Image 1 (tube, rainbow, N blue to C red):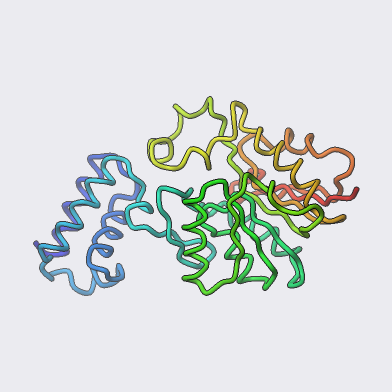
Image 2: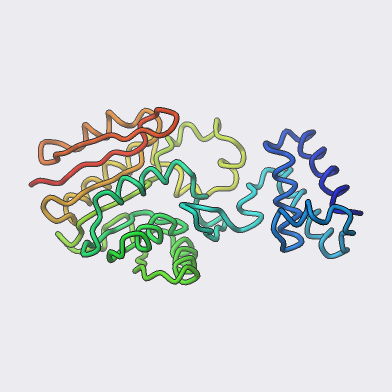
Length: 276
């Protein structure tokens, strides 16, 4: 079978299976099976697929048709222009989370201590460390996630300190200048309505924030009050319809509260300064 024919067949399978971006997904998997860039497929359309490559390719197609996300099949996802390894132990980094990074980058200085709470793949922590040169600490309640994040930091030659911790509970009082987090914020009552790729494959501990989706925000803000130095900054990614409830959690000792919107015009990032 040629590469061209393999792409055509996979595209048809994905179209029939209602898989989004069928042609692109087929190209990603074929390039991954060949361990080549996608451009190679167009330069060598008549090349014969080897038996080993066909075995891998067929497995990838089968897994995707059964709902497994493309990123968990290939084991990688781009974030802020860099490739991060991902496994089912971590949430797949989303482009929307880059708004959180960009907001924090405007504030962080090289002499700051920054903590990324709920680091997952380490995408936020590693990016902030590379872009700012600040001391970055990353926490996650999942030991498996911490291992994935630490491996990403090593692969990208970045120094980040990783801690297995429930939110910021293990950090010292008044030890942090900037706290950044993309916390679990999906209400657990919404579980049945999620896409199967998310509901059945991504780690629930990184998705669901409790019955209302606001419970982790409440705990995170309590932690932030303890660990942030006076006039330190809190940056959190916002879930759907969470902006007003999260703002109301802050209270009088927070100032410079600002909301940043994503490209769709939705409130995506809340920034606030701790002024006790």
